[in-house]
Length: 309
Image (tube, rainbow, N blue to C red):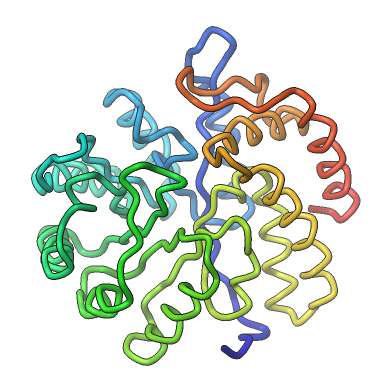
């Protein structure tokens, strides 16, 4: 793969949904994080795993959509069909989620489910055709099981077939494997260059060098630093790109270690350190990180401040 130098990178960032000490959602903090993402020039993605979308109550997901929609900016939102292993593909549940998201002004992204993940290859493609029937556009999602038990990485043949679905305008790829993403970039470039491949590889955030755009949980920690990095790449300032990217990648290696879902607690810790939210609490059912992470996170935050990110 050849590097795509001086390319304008499209950055999409999952937004953390913060909580207070009592276990209630910190809506003031969410407003602040959402606003910071938009101010940085990134497209916010809400009700994703970073925002605890799969475990939120319906009324809380609706409130997230309403708050985000009121900003009047483009955004993505996770469409969920909660189910159990062995469940059938819940097309109607997904389409109801699509309707709620588009009504709020957002673009849906299909969050994995057991029913969707259990489909055969041809059925998977047909399912995406059915999902796009009543919307102008939506995004697909390949998610490794290290992130979610219903996650699935499709075969390259399935990915290639999905490129022929006109309503499917892009796909987030979260295998954490460069080789699989490079294969998809090559196939995308051959068959549908305008299709947006969004890297979800928080352990290799420089995949943007080869033509991926991104939708990351890591960017929730510091959207302005990602924006500064992206601007440096577009300007041809590779020294600054790598300087910022290296610090952000260190942050990713630390916070996306096993168990991977613990990154959300690290995000809350980091954002509290930087004065962005009032409390480092997360959803009551989420994985927690040890307090000694704070020292490492503080050092990274200080480094980003020096870099102006």
